[in-house]
Image (cartoon, rainbow, N blue to C red):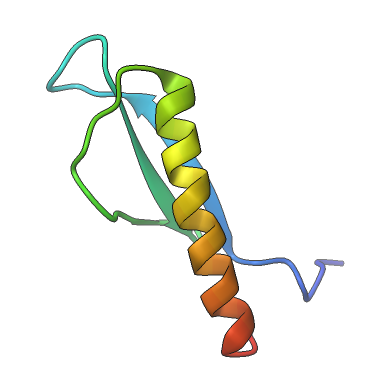
Amino acid sequence: MADRNAHPYSIDVRPCWRLPGRFVCSIVEKGEPRRYGAQSYATFDEARRAAQARLRQLVFEWQLVGS
């Protein structure tokens, strides 16, 4: 059984297809991409940290509206 308190978001970090050697990230909501910018990052970890910061905001907003 799924946890009713689990938020519907996940992070997707992948290599940038336009800029080799850089990474892009997005937030996925219920399996559908929910992009929030076209910025690329020098490292995987940098992209992951940026996505995690945005994810924290989205989860906070999601909790405010009562899921």
